[in-house]
Image (cartoon, rainbow, N blue to C red; front, side):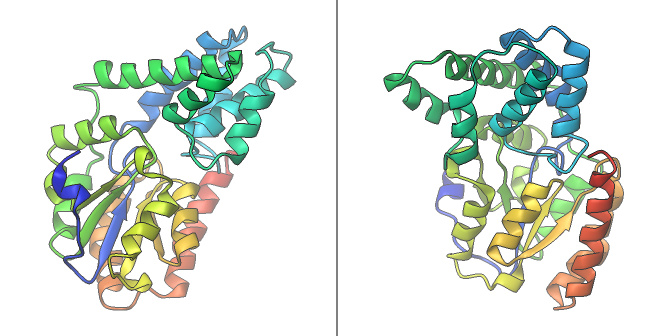
Length: 282
């Protein structure tokens, strides 16, 4: 990781945190449709792939669980598959871990496997590593920022500090943002290796920002929850409406944010539109 991100200190009175996949980068759909879903079906021996993959995309892209951690998503999809009669093996330990562990990552699974080898964790690690490798080797040239995101970030960084706050793989995010020249607009970088999004925002608050001077921009309920847990504002990027949302962020929300006019009523309106869209697919 670029050294300047690890030594970041507050430069402006305002901070804008931005998620990567599905928010700034148009990478979320392709990652799930080509890698996350199909590879999990391969590794866990799913027979009715069409139904499984349709459910996978609903869980991860088109419902209120959009953007959920990959391991939580895997457990949800496998549990649903079991209910449909699929034999995915014993996933009891995997389920308990995904629901209770403070750190959900490949590294955490590797530590578990050192002392307690089990087929469900071995398969899960194999799947996750395959996904990471495919993203790093097969997506070059296919990933791109959403229209409006690059210009939006360039405008925002002139007015506030900007932090990437993502639960995705660090190397993948850094590669994508560097390749598309977005890192020039970034001051701080928090990815999967540095904890949850809520923990990232909490750490950023220790740099000296007032809570009402921090805005989290994201496309998923997890982004909203991370903002709420820390008492900071949330601006949603709606799937299918990304350019309009980035334009609205720069031209409407940022002036309100900087001028102390990001009211509870305005926040409620943004969240209402966000939840109405996601709930259509629950």
